[in-house]
Length: 208
Image (cartoon, rainbow, N blue to C red; front, side, top):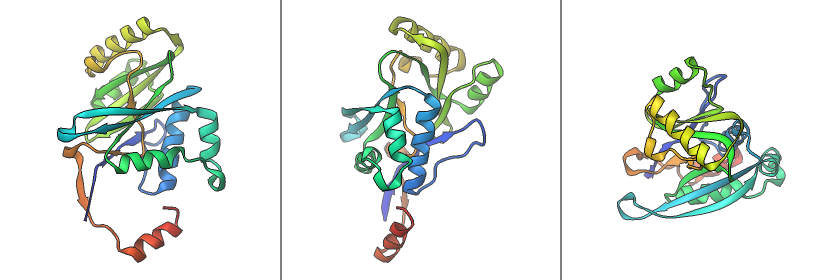
């Protein structure tokens, strides 16, 4: 048996599709989220946790969006951006993303689906909505211009208050979850059977 965390999925405006369980679909989920957010540079982090699920330290890397996506769209020459995250996530790290530096994006954390629907009704159309756990969502709002640190934090707090998000997590550069990886918090783990060797080898032939 193997214990896995709940999957973090990207909900698109077009069809509500979620990432699946193959490596190719993880690449697809990452590509779709980075494209939707639209920043030139991203900081991608693996948060390692210790006893009691307490954060220990964050491993941060800077990704150039164009370079990463071009690599992901060419399977034969893919660079090890996503495999590094798989490795960290498999070893219980949480996988996060944010635009690097000041940006035109605001993250609203810990939203209910009804709040996301109300956002759209009130004229706020998220660039990306990520389901982080059952019943909980994060929304990235994209503004017409870049917001400096002070204004970015003020906007994040105002939107979190307005739509019932986590005000404590509202600032100009808060990290959000990256779709396609497991939420490794203990309460979201589930036990599933692990295929035997022949099954794993067959899956490998199909892109795992």
